[in-house]
Amino acid sequence: MEISDNGLQFIEKEEGLSLNSYKDTKGIWTIGVGHTGPDVRGRMSISHAEVDRLFRLDLTRFVRAVNGVCTNVDTTQNQFDAMVSLAFNIGVGAFRSSSVARLHAAGQFSRAGDAFLLWKRAGKDPTKLLARRQRERSMYFVP
Image (cartoon, rainbow, N blue to C red):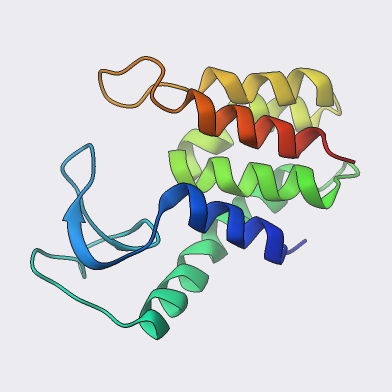
């Protein structure tokens, strides 16, 4: 599967878009739509076209990770998009080992959707991401 336009817009809205580099809540240099890596440093600026290019490039590994858990189970577009959003935010490794991925792969959709809410912590704040996880969970449950 591929992420839908709705999924792309959802992630961009949740992550935010910045043409200038900044340090995220963990102190990691970030630019564009949540893009990090050795190519990002302080006082850096990029164009909207570069934001789009980096976003599409970054998404490939998260789409691949979600496709990896959807191989033997029917998955709706909204379930897929919600899981890509989660993976984009928590990382491929964390997603692959998450109860969301495990339960979805087992076809336990109700439990998988509820498991989104387990990923609400950001740094020392135990509920910073709760609202985002509720929105992802809601998307996951839309047929």
